[in-house]
Image: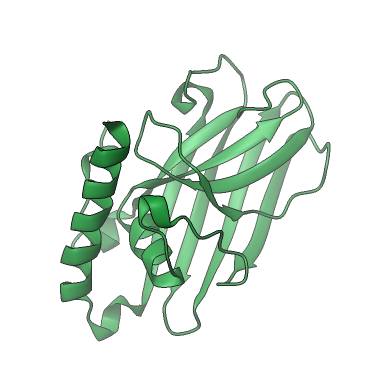
Amino acid sequence: MKKIAMLCAIGAILALGASGVQAQDQVVTVRASLEGSQENPGILTGAFGSAVFTLNRTTQQITYTVNIFNLPSGITGAHIHVGPRGQNGPIIFPLSWIPNVSNDFALTGTLTSNDLVLRQAVGIGSLEDAFWSISAGVTYVNVHTQVNPGGEIRGQICPSSADANIFIRVATCVG
């Protein structure tokens, strides 16, 4: 049932978004606040972070900076997953990271279609599908650690207030 709801939400977002793209919409910035309580199930941790993703349809790239603070054990992975708040979903982009780094650090990089993991079952069949899902609030960033291999901190990726008029601000970004 959750899978059907997620597919319906993604489909609606893609349909509405595809009809409303304008020239000025070629670069969009989205953000996430990462914390253990957003993990599913929630994690009690002192770690936290923030992320900024810039989606550029002209260059077909996503640039990102994920700032991580107070990570108590070494990082074992970082990804963008497709899924609404409170639900786990599949990875669509791996993020660059250095194994076993902890405490305070930043992950930075650029993603392209070569990095995309296609997930047809949840509506991610192209880079454009990923752009729409990320900009519409149905993806999250997750940082995995040695102590919490399923995820230490997580944050729903949402449009910034400046872009809220361009893309639908779905319920997964509120709360």
